[in-house]
Image (cartoon, helix red, strand yellow):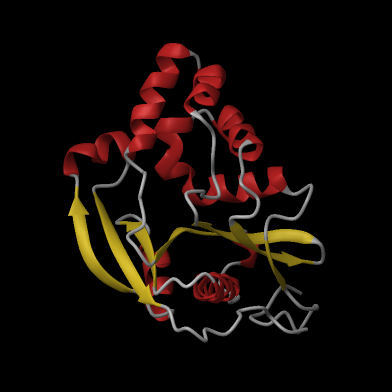
Length: 214
């Protein structure tokens, strides 16, 4: 018997802020499963990418969902100049070598997004494939909205690539609207996608917490 939207069949899904201590590698695996296709040209091979992500996580820049003590989903966000995934230029060069590292730094720079005043930038959602379709993504989005409200942000921003229509549909259901699409067909062969759509969702001052009750 698997998870359902509230976890009532097999117990509650626990949503918390921050990556649980000791779950950094698991968080990196989920992140890579969700975004490895996008980040692969910059961080491949996976055997280097996943440990690199795990070693440089900013654990306090995520909301996470756990079921029976196992991490099954997470959503990262950028706040105060820090995002869920980190790693300095010197760290990239140390892991990937000088020439390979320089190329990867140039590719990583393409993914950087800086928030406008009053915005919280959300990095996207990663959910265990076995737990998808059970409402976990919605719980995570609502908790990110609560974080945004508590920090006085008026808007959440995220970017979704054209090869991920499932994620875009979820964001639209949770109140996000597309504001612009940047088409980069020349990068499709390199990065695997040819357009990025920016989406916004307004944040209410009294945004409710998204934590799932037992």
